[in-house]
Image (cartoon, one colour):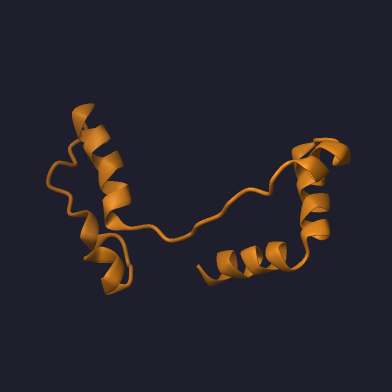
Length: 81
């Protein structure tokens, strides 16, 4: 998580460089990249966010009905409650 947060800080600290990298990796022209908003990143995942996907998988027959998402997501206690 620290490396992802560090990358986000780098993006936020030098928008011109971030846009240059985005243009390079996306293949979009720099003129287009200059006009679009930078992607929004959020690296915090809560058990509730994953539970939606568990429920979708269960509805498709995956044997995950008894999987307790709270045991596979490490989050601050304030995020879990």
